Image 1 (cartoon, rainbow, N blue to C red):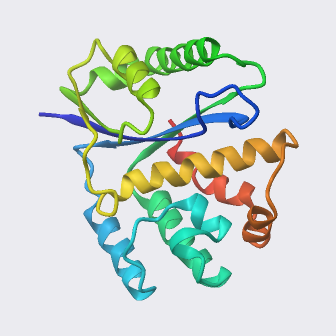
Image 2 (cartoon, rainbow, N blue to C red; image 1 turned 180 degrees about the vertical axis):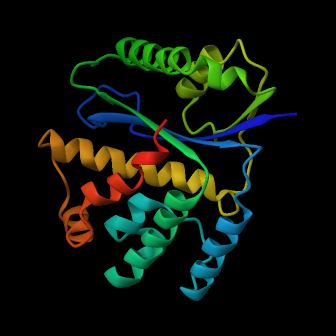
Length: 221
């Protein structure tokens, strides 16, 4: 059976009050069952073991110097980021992000409508690709029930299953989706002159986001 595994993560929320996020980002990582990523996973694990880091790579906390990373130097954090980035660049995967600026979708109804429209367009534009698979398995932790509901609706015509309970440390492709939400959101903010935190600017000062994103260009879906 030919299976497409899709790992999904989001950044932002469905709120519309003053404390709500300005952007909503959904990122997808696609892996066909015909592609073997074991060599790349083994290389990543070896690299992380060398760095003595065995936890989940949460890019936002990594860059903002919080949580599991608050006691690590910027050099250590950059090495961890580079490890997951290079894994993403070299692995036989496909990547996609959808970004919605809530300035123009300032109600829950409008945000849901926009996300549904963009996801339907994604499927429509790549219908032959999705139809090649006998089954589609979506890995999403149900972090937001609203997004789960939208995903169930737009993929309803496929043989699909959802897995919400999985080991986030083990599933490195979920961590890639997490990384992608941050990278694409950061570049969107940069291009549109939106607020970028000091820690974010410092972290990417010598790495240049445009070069990083260029390195993933061939992976884009």
